[in-house]
Amino acid sequence: MRRLNRRTIAHAAAGVLAGVVGMSVAHLTAALLTPASSPALAVGTAVINATPTPVKEWAVRELGHADKPILIGSVLLATIAFAAVIGVVARRRLRLGVLLLAGLVLLPGAAVVLQPLFKASDLIPTLVALVLGPAALVVLTRALNAAEEHTPGQTPEGPTVHPTDAESGGLSTRRNVLIGFGALTLLSAAAAAGGELVVRSRTAIANLKLPRVGKPLPALPTGLEETYDGISSFRTPNRDFYRVDTKLAVPIVDQDSWTLTIDGDVERELTFSYDDLRERENVEHDITLTCVSNEVGGKLVGAARWTGVPLKDLLEEAGIGDRADQILSTDVEGFTISTPLEAALDGRNAMIALGMNGEVLSRTHGFPARLVVPGLYGYVGATKWVTKLTLTRYDAATAYWTDRDWATDAPIKLSSRIDTPRPLSNIPAGRTVIGGVAWAQQHGVAKVEVRIDGGRWQPAELGPDAGIDYWRQWYLPWVAEEGSHQLAVRVTDRDGTLQSTDRATPFPEGSSGIQDIVVTVG
Image (tube, rainbow, N blue to C red; front, side, top):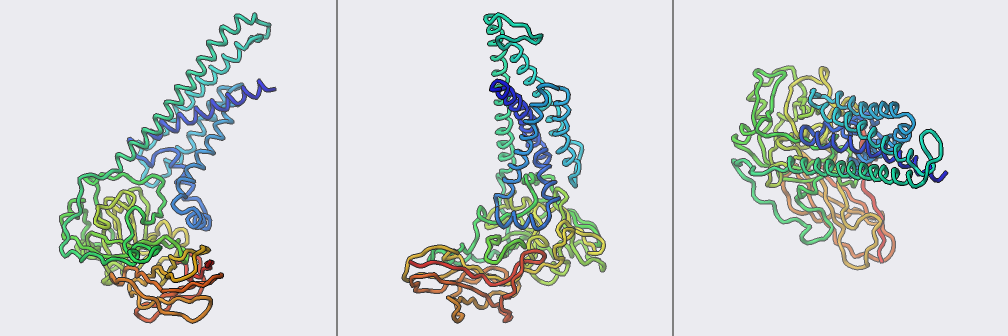
């Protein structure tokens, strides 16, 4: 029984290694061509698209930036489990094992074909896996079977063999098995590491500087974080800026071949190159972006200085028709977002951004260009890797998120957040501060108030002001006494509108309610 278990485990390992060989070399091939064509990533994307909205919301809320690595890891673990079973089957029925492994490869191949902008070359990584995976399975299975046939005291026909002869042949075959396993393991590791190195080298953006800005903004003032620990930075560093999108592999776009097309209900279709946009007079705007999945008190919000071209100027240059009521923006992989046309024309600082916080956009945040529309949640106003703007009507075309029943119009709701002290934290008694950030886009923050232990609302001190589309830091000095305390915050905008107390989840139009936390002092 122990020998049988060892043999079963060995064949399961052969199946796993065969699957890993196919996936890793396919990953390297995709890295050299189009990262999104990696079979594992294609399956992950298909899973994302098929996942019900409540599950997506849970993943964003509970897993944060780890949601994508966990999804990819889950896909790989499931693949490995199936490959192990296939390896055991192949021990007795090699042809069936090969067919099953081929089927396991063809499943993600189908996911590749179903991608919006599929092209024939996207199947190359799948074909690589389809050849190498089954081939590795055949080699490993035959080597293991040969080693079993030369086990002392046993031959394929059954008669007893002299131990000396069997041991001599068995030693050679077992050595071959170990060599085969070792070689394929090294190949897999090298291919996987090589794929990551290729992707990282291709995502690096070198020798690009921000375009000239016609009227640069003055430097942002020093934020409260310099004085009070725990309050979010007045300007969110690019590395810390939240990222929520459907991409498992960040698109790698060549700025020399990239274009932005404006079509649909326009007088003339226009196409701009990256250099065209850089050579225009660029502008700067301080704008806070918020994800619709952000819970009350959540972290899916960030503030940055954006550099780019006014969206209204580009649309007016194309000549806006009289029928359109939405801008259907499309990214380089066919993902779509719908934005109210009015939001681009009503005077707000909507733009095609090329830079962020004094740097060229990173690939993670949308290089070479992204849409930034202040006052709207990201899923309707912040298309990354944008390549086309189509003026059309809502009754004629729908976008990815609106197809999933999210609200069509998505103005960012008034909100405020306590950064310090942190919820459920334990802090020492004595003088401290309660502090955080608040935002009231398109209107501006007028007042932030804090309530302690259900008492009266007390006005907080506001930090520097960078405009109506940028968040405000705030703080309230507090002499903390020992015990458990309940803290709450609310914001009022410059029109006198008070933050809503009605509790709402992010779906379908953004969360609302008052953040109320508990801390322990002493």
